[in-house]
Image (cartoon, rainbow, N blue to C red; front, side, top):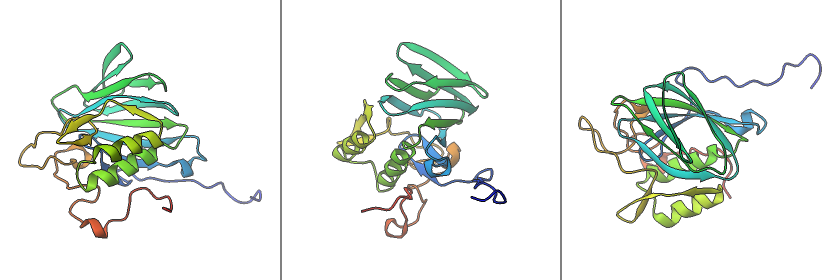
Length: 205
């Protein structure tokens, strides 16, 4: 790069980013590893009322969470805290942790992942979930590829990222866009599966 060239930047407007469904929580992709030279990735997670992310353990990355709406409970090892908007927490690799919506209203948090890479787990999980709850072998294989140990919930022989949520206000039990209770049938709303591109932007072999 010459001295006259400005460094590349990535801009994500408010409300921007691909959205997906992980089971009981959603995911909105803000910064991917390719945007940061692999240093970190950033996603947002909407938590509808009653949402739970079951205990899991990362072996390759640390996470840093910032609550932006509602109340979210965190348990890391034997330590537990409930944070409201503006609260921060570190979640080091190698320690079992869980999260849940601790209030009656939708909640939301920013997740900073370092180093980057685990955002692709979320993308692949969202692609699987778009077609219905993933089969247990699929989920175990996906978690293994990303060094994730999960005490997954099981529903009718399927693995889910937490228990299936109860429908609210006539909504389906799929993801709610932005955690606001809007029914969705997967990552791309009502788009037929054959017409959806995968969330994960990496080339597939």
